[in-house]
Length: 557
Image (tube, rainbow, N blue to C red):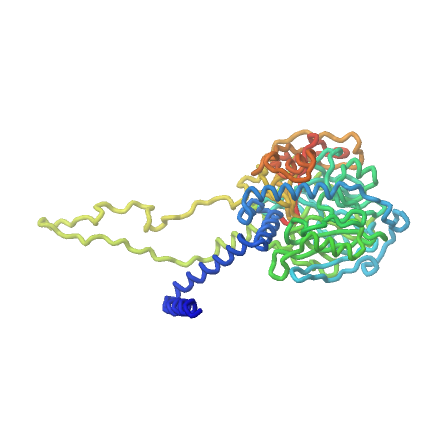
């Protein structure tokens, strides 16, 4: 017993004699060894690494998840995530469970106090807001007032006279700096299709309301939505409560923690909305399971998620923005929002995509706040550095008294190190942005929300966020209207999808999945499509190649 104690005492005495630098290095090494041993040699550590990978997968940086679980397991997790999402959206909704005003489609104008109620909600790891809307027929999908860029929710609320608003569907978001004018999926307002990038016969995830005020959450075709009398709708996912049952029965939902916008409906028609801050010191973010369970406690029978990540926000007409978006620039420009009106008939939607033939999703090169920040950084005075004088050998006169040259024998050429002006950087386009606004950015394999830039893949995104797929290379195709979708006019996008990814569909095997589900999960997770963003006035849904997965964004972008 005494020998180990003596050895320990000698070691401590020796360490006390070390310099502070040596002690610092030793402490860092010891901490790294302990943490690595915990993360890689214990079951709890493995679970922690998977949780961190899930969180990263649902952001715009999906590829980075390999640092926690390796590339192969990351790809399996992504494929499983998409399979779960698709399965959660398949159960048909029982519309008979909801009774809104006896099925009457007429609304009565109400004051804000009668119509909405906002409360604070929190948990140990997050803070947010909960809003009740007592008449779902007062909710309308609102779109930007002008073509070319999205609109902030606070601007929409002020412009339309609405009582409150939350973010809506996903959009193409290059570098997290998109202009909010390139939606993903579809947008329906007042029963009219304002925008769609898929044929009316292709099922997509939806969050919307019928004319009677029934919340519709799940996976439906536009043709089916029109038949059931849809009035307001955007594309997003996942559904977490179907016909009174929670769909996440184990784990936390697989998306990690992040900013969330969830929406659900009780049997009496009351709509419950939860907007959670995330990716900040005061609020890390919520999991899907946490919000599902809170919705079930409220008596919600159907619920799903809208776009999340940096787009998650809640605005009221009295207090303005009352949540704290994770975007460093505050409110984001968005292509759609769900607003609550005292008299919903007062809002008549315009169509900013009508007649548009090419959509530029923006990026670093045209984001006003980013460019302003870059200009300010450029104009900051830089500390002056006096160039050090180069030393040369002292000339030594020869017998003829002629001075000799410097040690090099030649003068230093201009522009080399040490010369004034050396190392001046040449101008370049902002990182991640296209130097030419006329070129549509290409897509790439992305995560969770489908992520933009180099990490997004249309159709395959899991995140709840600012998330988004990346548009195509600009080649346009002719939209093919669905034969059965006849209502509404709007712009259309014809995506051309190619399945490519870090893991091909055949590489990812999911236990318990049927052949069709296996193919669907792998195919949805992998396409790096180049949707040609084209626009045109037309009736119904725009065409798309049959079976092409819809480009989708994830929460958490």
